[in-house]
Image 1 (cartoon, rainbow, N blue to C red):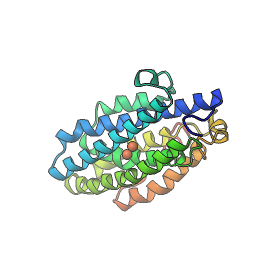
Image 2 (cartoon, helix red, strand yellow):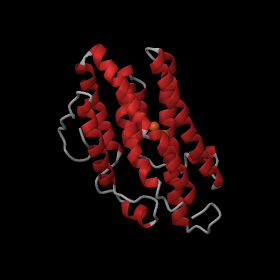
Image 3 (cartoon, rainbow, N blue to C red):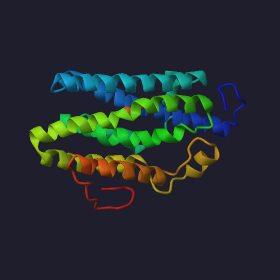
Length: 231
Ligand SMILES: [Fe+2]
Ligand SMILES: [Fe+2]
């Protein structure tokens, strides 16, 4: 599908909803990283945050352009967003973050975001597939940068404060993928807008992230509830 292809109403409505969510997710990253540039503890960290902020702002902007091409302006976008509680939750968390939280956000949440975006690289909507493939090139490096500076934070402050906060972010990240059996999964796959279920994306994330958690000397947090919602 292209912007000028004849689009069945269900396809268009679903595409607009997913794109509006993409705009919002990129905005969370853009706001968070840019608000921390001035508070970074050293020059390397400041440069790292500026890179993340630039990348996420670029992704946000490009997602907006895709919606505009479909005739949806910035003002109308919020009418298309889904009511995913993750966004409300992330707003609440972002207000009370520390430097370690920022690093964990980049290490865990950005890592999860990679697997959400990966589905879009095969989107039946060609401009989105193209854009997703391009922004994936930035996204691969985001968790890497997080882990590099987490190691430094661990050297300075020890494992305990990082491990404690990882417990929180690990749960937020697992819940970000949504319920195991979601109503819309079959629709998204049928329309070619995604290719995996929430659970398959979550498993792919866990397989990739858990070894990286151990690599930097942390433990994968123990869960009290093993299925969605994780806590
Ligand atoms: Fe992004
Ligand atoms: Fe990112």
